Image (cartoon, rainbow, N blue to C red; front, side, top):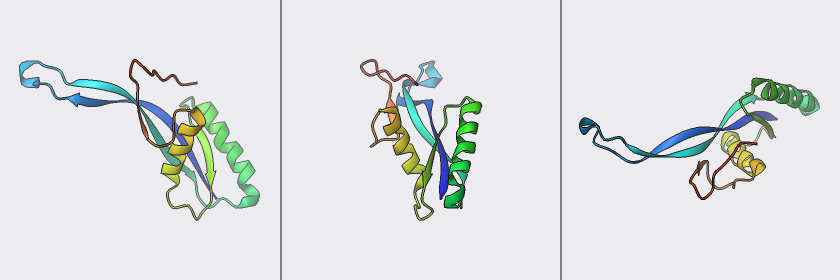
Length: 110
């Protein structure tokens, strides 16, 4: 088994480039971006509960908003799957890794 930690972070995207040489700023929009990192590979099934508890403890104590997920060792795209599952877990969709924070649908972390 593999354990992955995922979280959502604030970011921005340039919508329209400004003329910086003339003092114009770029026009941007705020985004929430799903990020994931590998916590541990090769966890034996009998040790999964203890490893998940340790990952959950780290996630809670870090204060960074991580959520732990477990996937089979045969899964080759665990980071993207964790991002998708995090978005489902937070209830903000599963088809994108970048979420626009417009005025019509503001997003707040739980």
